[in-house]
Length: 197
Image (cartoon, rainbow, N blue to C red; front, side, top):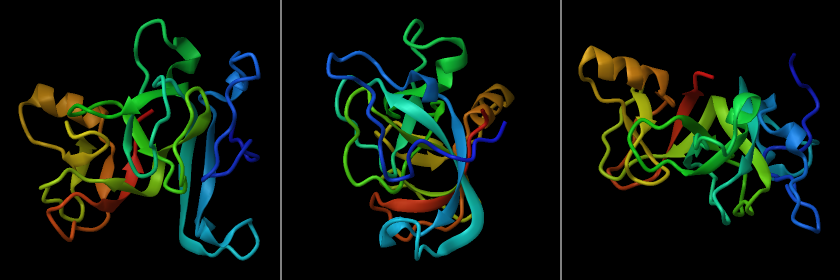
């Protein structure tokens, strides 16, 4: 089923708790929506222009990091701790910024301008064009396959290795660079996110 009416837009969050700190909106965890690639800086829907004909595919996730989380343009990891989430909601929560090579996750909502409060819901981009932080000193060229790096919230070129390493890396590929990096200092880079979920 394709969801066509998201509970909130890119650049927004959804409250995840009530006044008694009970979790709310759990039925949205893991819901996947497609958004048009438009310039949202002009405000509500009227007047928005398309950046491309592509769609941005995003999954609604809960911040389970235990605190406020900076997500915009960061590589983020799904919460895969046994017992934290199980089964159908496994892809419905994020435990923090990626901090190791080749972690399973996606790219934080590019439109967010604030941090996400603990237990609130936000969008994790798993497909389509998005900007993401690249590792300081990385030399990324157009077309490179990208995976998470050991530098928090950033990506690097997927390294070649043995067939076993290659298979593991292929499963957790974050996307492909759409442009080359213009400097060696850490900055953001436009990529085609292509998370295999």
